[in-house]
Length: 202
Image 1 (cartoon, rainbow, N blue to C red):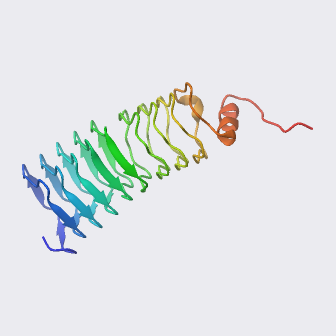
Image 2 (cartoon, rainbow, N blue to C red; image 1 turned 30 degrees about the vertical axis):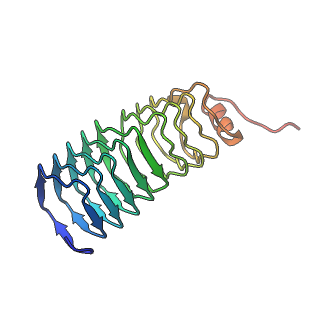
Image 3 (cartoon, helix red, strand yellow; image 1 turned 30 degrees about the horizontal axis):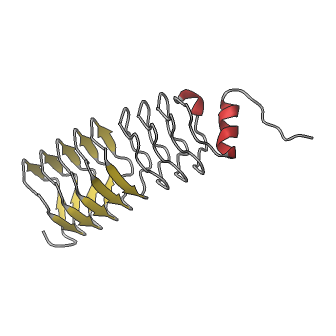
């Protein structure tokens, strides 16, 4: 497919797209089933409201590409690189994320309930309004990430680094904490979520 060409409402079944290059291509409301995208590359590509079922993005690299409003089921991102990518409003079910390299990007409004994101470096990632309920973020690095309005019920944040993260409207009391690293603002928020009233000394 040529760059800037658009494909709409097509189904791709059991295709071998190993090392395929996506250069500014656009897919809208397409379905990908058991498509092998191992070592594929994309730059400025766009996938809008697409479905990925049992696909493999293993060792693939994606730069400034968008996967907006997509659904990923039993899809593997093993050893993939996501550089400045947009996953706004996407849903992940039973996906493999580790190991994964993430360099910034917009993941606002994603649903990743129960996802294993442990140990990942997600610093600076925009995760506002994300549903991370029951997700495992043990030892994850979330420094300077935007977690405003994120749902963290049952989320494992043991030994996670949240320093500098935007935690506006986040209820840390429903998350599982332990040796979690917080800055002063985060510590105050945690205290207040447990009913404390933080005041400056007079």
